[in-house]
Amino acid sequence: MLEQLETLHTGALSELEAVKDSGALHEWESKYLGGKGGVTLLLRGIGQLPKEQRADFGKRANEVRDLLTEAYIGREKLVHEHELARDLEEGQIDVTLPGRERSVGGLHPSTQTLRELYAIWADMGFQVYRSRDVEDDETNFSMLNIPPHHPARDMWDTFYTTTPGVILRTHTSPGQIRSMHELGGNGTQPIRVILPGMCYRYEHITTRSEMQFHQLEGVAIGRNIRMTDLKGTVTAFARRMFGANAAVRFRASYFPFTEPSMEIDVECFLCGGQGCKVCKYAGWLEIAGAGMMHPTVLRNGGYDPSQWSGFAFGMGPERMAMLKHGINDIRYFWGNDLRFLEQF
Ligand code: DAH
Image (cartoon, rainbow, N blue to C red; front, side, top):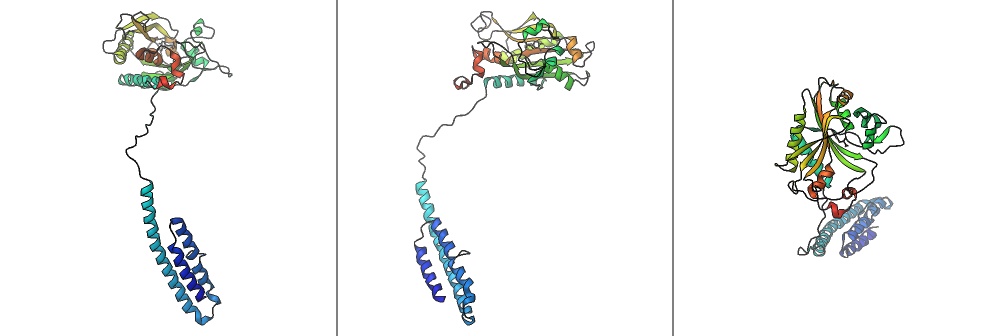
């Protein structure tokens, strides 16, 4: 066994000389020094020797193990140095090569416009209130003073679901009802919110109408809110959005949920009111519908209309983006054409 040990010793050393990489080094280690390695196995067989030889053999075997370990450590250092040098050589980076450009994503033009709107309205004390996309008929229409079968329902072509009474909201106005109930404290608290969101209409899709689009609704309720507040607030908004000199015009109109109702135009900021293609030579661009909240709507939101009043408005962010950037086809917004989207 002693002879076996010495053979193993010299064999192991000469094998180690040939080891060139970490893989082989690892194999060598388990072959000789590991738990099932040669030295360990011989040591384990020590019981087969006559008693008087055991001490000498054990001493020598431990010596051999220490010598091999030492040799292993020396070799390991060499192999690592070698490998590092090779990696540096092979992995050299040519810093003079041109870089690969990374494409960076961007915000959708509707998102950009919405954020611009949030910032302006936030400055004027309006908080964002999020209402649902899937509405019930009652809140989308009846609570807004549009009873079933009322001809005004024709103003909104509606997507119905297979569940009776459940629809996709056709405008953000039902959020008026929900925000009054949630924030109004049973008609005891003033409210100042904007309600942005996607709206859906069963429309014939053309350059000017889509079946989905954003709206941004605004609601202000207080004890003494008047038409002059609406006009002043909207004018201040238009100047922030379209330029300090933007002129604003209010035209009488009709909505079932406001009385009086109006449509709001800004002077065309492209031609300065002279008339151009974008404003269709009118000199004015429509940006919103608005009005004083109808007493019935206030009552449906829990307010006593003899004590409280409010104004509301609804504007179309895509329309505004179209006007601002001269986009002549609303279908671009949801067409997912990167050539369009990357321009913003
Ligand atoms: N909901 C209206 C629409 O979709 C827009 C609107 C008009 C909202 C007048 C209002 C408003 O809050 O007062 O056409």
